[in-house]
Image 1 (cartoon, rainbow, N blue to C red):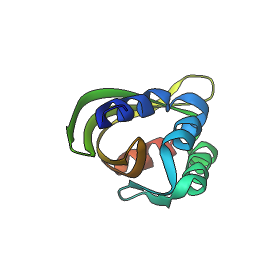
Image 2 (cartoon, rainbow, N blue to C red; image 1 turned 120 degrees about the horizontal axis):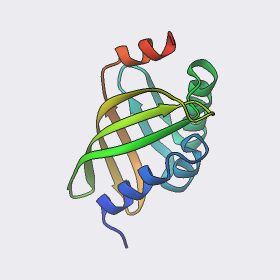
Image 3 (cartoon, rainbow, N blue to C red; image 1 turned 135 degrees about the horizontal axis):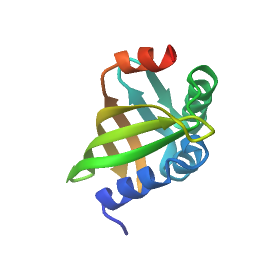
Length: 128
């Protein structure tokens, strides 16, 4: 069995595929809570998919490429500092934002994911 850090690293490595849906399908549960502080909260796979679809429709985000800056674990909790790069379908970058997040795992499944970032970033990329 992989460690929590290995699972989170694999999750983020898979995130660029199909708007994050491949990663969400593999690592989320029907009860996973995903919090983008100040922006949105989803519960489960279907709501997470709806959020990625909404971000594609309203902002044009087709892909998120995640650069891990730092990662640490405390038991089943994994803390991350990342640079998330948001891209259009043609591969051009919409923008990038530094994120601090915490993911909680139950075995190899993510049961909670909370991200904290400058919410003004969403307004900036929405106006592009």
